[in-house]
Length: 103
Image (cartoon, rainbow, N blue to C red; front, side, top):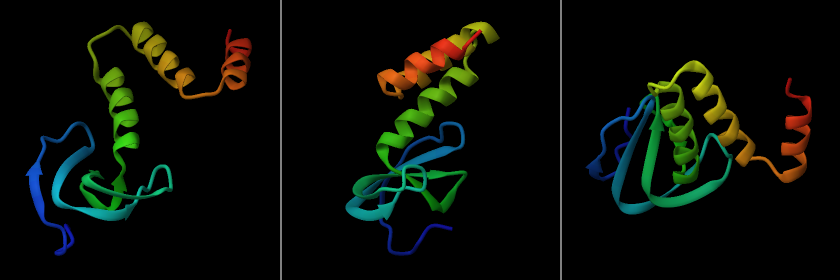
């Protein structure tokens, strides 16, 4: 249930399990994914749970993963796209180690 103190200016269409809102005023919140304290006019709920808010950076990351998984590419193409995305989130040493370990 939406907290009474939040004044929504715009309600964007849900994308997968995420629903983004633009607020009239910047609001302080805690991103449940990255653990950072944020203050923004854009808030995203996960599974319509107002206790599980995402910052815009985490929303973008999860959205790109969701779009790969929900796309029309073959399973092999989806796996390759997802691997490229996930490797881009790692530092160079982690990326080299992951590539070394892959078959």
